[in-house]
Length: 414
Image (tube, rainbow, N blue to C red):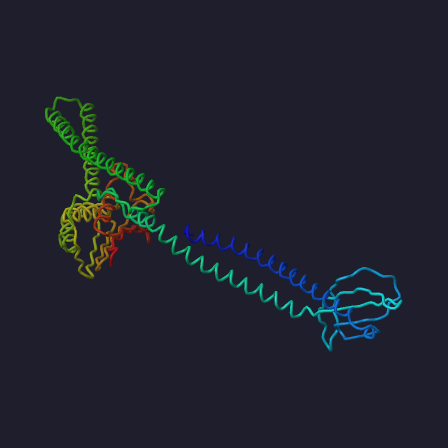
């Protein structure tokens, strides 16, 4: 729930609560005022009656408003009460005054009544008018509050949108929308400082990664050449030769890891231009020919179906690495006498292969240094493939079906 909506909801809830209490209080206040006015009217009517000629004080009855009759009970004080009297076929509420007077040695009970129906209608109508006015005012205040809040919070939402689009890879500084609100300006200052530091740290880390990878290439090449020269001298024992071979394999693997990490860094830093128009079918045919000897060595059956041409705007070097990794992966992890199936559609490439291994963990498959059951692998091939797909606007997914491992590459913009 948005902050403005939550504030408005709380505002409406508390306003309705106050409005309800105000309405109830107003109703009772109006009722008390009307009752007081009615009592004064009854007293005036009573005073007018007792000032009339004595002849009218003999058991006079004007139902249901006035009643005068001789009363032999003990005199009581003036009493105001609410009562219900039947008028015709209906019962109506009345306010009545009962008092006594003495005249010519006789005591009379005088009862004066006033209908409360008109008064009830008056204060109910007044209460309704006031409540409706409050409701309208509340509705108006909510609308005004929303407009004011949107205006006040606009710089905040603008900066939030800019933060969503912020990326350290673009190297574009975060420039916040200015505001005349002190708290927002303090937040803008913190965000500007933070994003500037993040960009600076990222640039430092990127340079370190590139320099480290480049610097490692030279000593690795020297070590490899020295080992090769040592093996060519034929002055080592068989045990020493085995140890040197192990070192040589380790150096080669380390060199591949270093090259792979350097390639990943370059891809993540967008150092490859993606402006070449490339026919994927031509790339597939070229790599299938390059891998023909390896395919024949493992007696693999390769089936390729070109259902439709697919031309994309990409980088030739990256696309070669992508296709090479997919086909090479299908060969290396395949069993002898297995099969490889490649299908090309417009916007879709499917590579499937048999394997000695079961279903792989799709959540970890494209992570760096994930090797599965092959311990000799550097664990960077599919991670590089994933990064290349991301860079070229492609999506790669894995699933296992009918004893086949499927890798599907599709255009996310199609």
